[in-house]
Image (cartoon, rainbow, N blue to C red):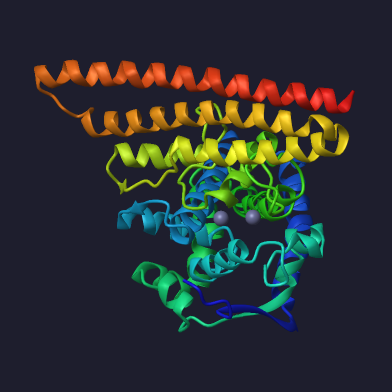
Length: 384
Ligand SMILES: [Zn+2]
Ligand SMILES: [Zn+2]
């Protein structure tokens, strides 16, 4: 996919979009306050709000983002249909449009061609970019590629009826079952649209502005545990820009990434397949390269006489950590290929590979810690 003119901004303002983005937050706030203070509060409606919020939010991250744009896994049609229906309820336009914009964001990040270029300012990246009308060439190579799925084309064609039905009619009708149609509309409908808008928009604004850059500083994307908590794991954005086809954004087990957990659950239910993930070795390589660059820049500037020796020692420690990561990665692959063997003879072999994999991981962690501590020591010396 190489076409870069498939979607672009036009000079015309999109007044319906501006009105929607400007008016929905105060309307939702006023309506929810009225619902609450007029004594209409209902626990069932609150639960419905949480369910709708999750369904809509995760359809944007697991569906629009990781599935339809980055093809980080393959999904069966019921899963795709669910993501397209509830993704439409996010009021972020059709998946076909969304994917083309997001593809362009990755390809031209931080440049004028990036639709949500952070260099044009925080508010432009957050929502200002939506204020101008955009044009899409769905017949371009990029458009054709992203429109291959008949369900995606269907959702694009009937976007507004689907969005109205799933964002507003559905929660209103469900809450009407317990006599709170107004609460269903205002809290689980409009409230979800507004909250979800700003949490999703935060990926383009805050996640290119606040946080750490452990994998690369060649672009503005940043990792933040705090932001990941609010946007279903998309806060590990520095990682994501380095490895966009990985179905995970938070790679450690304790990283808050509900989108990754949902994809894993769907995988165990055999509803999705071919999950793509980057090897531990490649991740470590990128992380070490970034640390080396940072350390060398500081040490060369502060203690130039020591820079050559620091570089040599650091390179050696990095090489040890990397070769341990390589061994761990190979054993992981070996174990993944063997683990479903059921025969008694194979079971012993599987167990043995598992143990070797575990000890390779421990060895890597130890060597990586040594490497990181060595670098920290050099940085301290440079700061002294
Ligand atoms: Zn980004
Ligand atoms: Zn992305």
